Image (cartoon, rainbow, N blue to C red; front, side, top):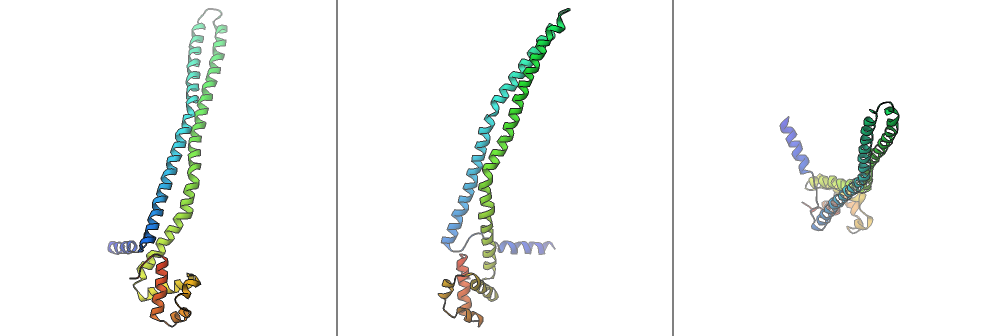
Length: 215
């Protein structure tokens, strides 16, 4: 069983065709792939920059929380000392306690502002990345994978007579009439008759469309 799996994996890898045989097509594919990688990389950098910029908005909230907490602690400490005054201590502590509560409210507002900025620092970069990544995942990648699949199958069968017949059939079904007409007005009839020259010409037309050479 392991040997069968290895043979199946090797056959799968042999059937994978990442780039065309013809130099102009292969060069265009390579340049496009590089540009897509650069496109994604630049948008990731933009998203990270947005994250860093938004996170700086949390600095005022940090200062507000720190100042509010410090004032509240000082007022609570002062109220505790005043509260030790005989007879009037309880009455004197009330203003300090009220001011300390107000300072804690300011500290809470600063903390909430930091939480809001933290959420914003996640949402905005995600929104910035969503459209570029959607273009790559739903437009470029399906087209690229479809070519890889079709080219891999075509490359695997192009040397086999039955495979050439399939390629010829594919050319008759998908090639423009102007391209088929260049092979002769009776190309379809010749293919139906099993003419090897017609089959080879049609197969070559389909291979050329995929950027592959005959083998």
